Image (cartoon, rainbow, N blue to C red; front, side, top):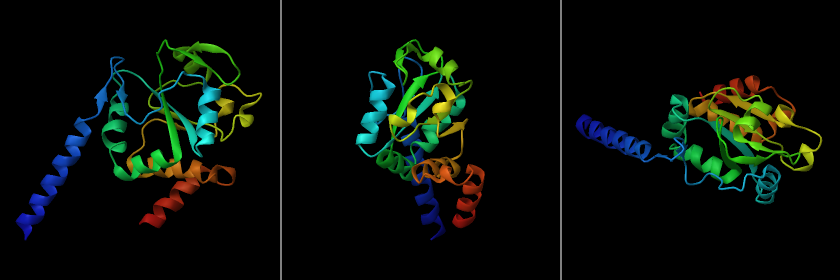
Length: 189
């Protein structure tokens, strides 16, 4: 029986490793998921389309060679529960902190990804910005003032998923994330 359990564990581990190896690196040096938003990089349009689909828009900032970005893709994004939750509830727009692609911000200003990162105060990767549920909620705001929440850096799978639940459930309206996280971790044992 012990041999069978060991064999099953090895097969499962090899399967997880194979999934992690399937993560693709693009010509820009970033890891990509086939379910990320392919966009014309007009943030107002992207937010409106996300809202129309009943989802929340997030911006995932990454950079070439980032070991924590790699971990995010090879661990968190291959987790079936995380992937399903994100696909069901969020639209992920990936931007490069050093990128040159033109992006139109919510106020209509066009700039490179790099300048937009500076405008938003994004200094390291991965950083995930959680944006308001509607375009109307962005009016008169720029930069970091637009955010509902921010995930500055890599989080292991459990707190990572809890952060997305925090935003989806609009818990930010009444509870600080640390308190929400402690309660969620306590419930899960």
